[in-house]
Length: 326
Ligand code: PBG
View 1 (cartoon, helix red, strand yellow):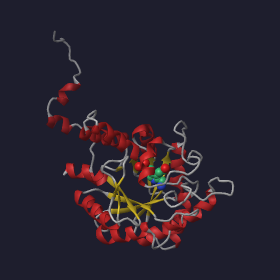
View 2 (spheres, rainbow, N blue to C red):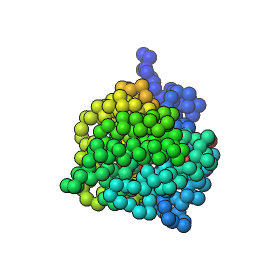
View 3 (cartoon, rainbow, N blue to C red):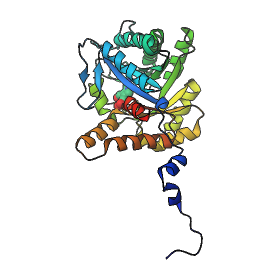
């Protein structure tokens, strides 16, 4: 029976693809996507990462090709993670001008530095033999303030090598202020800081620790990364804003859409979200089993992250999605 009174019919706007397209404000823009890339010292061929099918640890050469491909696809940026051949207690390779990340940044700055945004993850866990994101006290705790000096030195080394954005991911208190100060005094006032501001102690980083060979050798990161059950995201973000962050990031993404939405509503800075290794691995594994439609799932997760309020999304699918969007 047709009702005799006017009925609100949302389905009217879903009737045809052009209507749906017209009324959908959320888009996944290639220029908003950032491709994470791993580069490893001392390998002759790219090494597949078993828990992240399709992702490899690059040689310097294959990294250059991957970055060129990402840029040709139209991604907004690339973020480089380095894996040194030798690790030690203070993560010496992280700020070595001839360390793998600095060499790779110089390569990419020359190749694609004027066509894309060149970002560098700024942390110690890939470089320390104990796998923690900071220096340790004699009793094995992460020493917040001593670590800040290391981060400051790494920021300057990365900027000197051509990074246009440094992305501190270690969750030390005061890290943005320390890095901003070091960059400014070294003449890199133009280098931006994308702060991993709301970064949770997450099981979703599991595959990354294979890719970057940085699993903590003892303990976990729960004493510095955020507790998923705590409500301290906005506090962390506002501190970083006050210390000079240019972009604030939430990580992981899909399980933290409420946090992305809260931050996007609360600050005037661009908000980034990191769709992390475990989010990638879950979809790839389910798709490989025929349990999920891979492309639709990827697109739906990115749409959700974008709808929540992320302006920038770091995703291992960046190049592929950008290629499809063209
Ligand atoms: C720390 C860092 C991590 C990730 C990005 N930067 C690992 C961690 O905090 O344990 C995770 C990224 C991912 O899982 O894709 N340098």
